[in-house]
Length: 107
Image 1 (cartoon, helix red, strand yellow):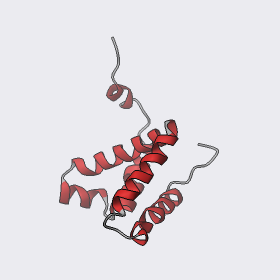
Image 2: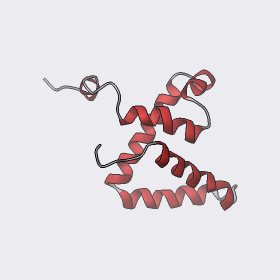
Image 3: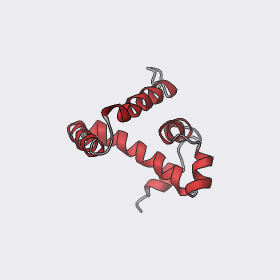
């Protein structure tokens, strides 16, 4: 019998990296707490955002050339209506996220 990802996930420790994304990265990138987002956009929104963030990290690590290419495509798309300065939030948010969820050698 094949065990699903959900069944395996249920066996993971109570707190882990996905919780850090939900608790720390989601508010940085969305500008609201998960509770505020859930109230405004529905309970699924912050969970979906966190899952997408996590899977984006996996994609960037496994296919960095694709992630870099798509980043440039996405940036060009937003520059159709935004200034380069408008997109400085991306760099600011990336820096804040890296500081909020530090990576140590003991992990």
